[in-house]
Each structure stands twice: as C-alpha cells, then as structure tokens.
Length: 124
Image 1 (cartoon, helix red, strand yellow):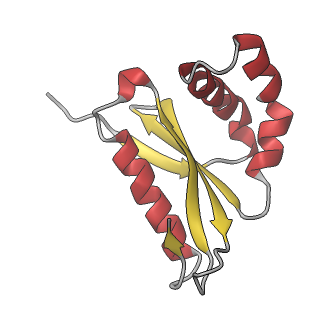
Image 2 (cartoon, one colour):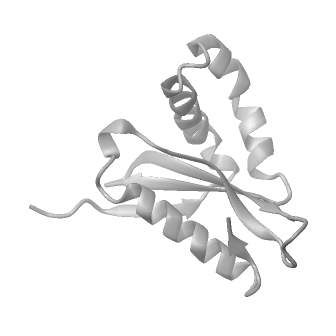
C-alpha cells in the first residue's frame, strides 16, 4: 500500500476559504462554539486579513491533494529570550487524516519557516 502524500505550503489570500472551513472544523471540535458563531468569526475576509497580519504565518497541510490541517504561528518577543521566536498558536488536523504524518509535516514546515526567517529564530 502506498504511503499518503502530504504537502505543506504557506497559506495565501487565495486559501482563505479553505482555511476558514478548516478553522470552523477545529473550533467546533473544541465544543466551544456553535456552527453559526464559528462561521461568523471565520468569514473569509477576517481570515484573509489574518493571513496578511505582520508576524503571522499560516501553513496548510494537504493529504493526497485534499486540505486536512493547518498551523498558525506568530513571532513572539519574550522578555528572557534575546531573539524573537516563532510560537505555534494553533495546530489542527482533521480527524480522518490523523496518524498519517500530517502534524509532523506541519511541525517540519514551522521549523523550515523559522530557519528561513533568520538563524537566531527558534520555535517555542
């Protein structure tokens, strides 16, 4: 049996609809929001704005061409750390895509992002 093909890419404005749908799923899985409330919070305009927010990066994971997860990372300046670090604020993988390496690929993408933003940036 062939291994599933997982890819990770940085989200762009064109991914706002896909990211909104995944974020709504993640919010509902926590049981803290209703479908309507989550949909209002995740309207495509707000998500598109978040994708472009300075210091914020969103990575999307695809499993065999289907969107299955995301990671939201932000630059943090901690008082005891000299250099800024990337903090993982959200990480979500659809239930049916779990245990197939998707989260590992997202974390590897975060590490690559930290490396690309400077040799002194770490991930916290």
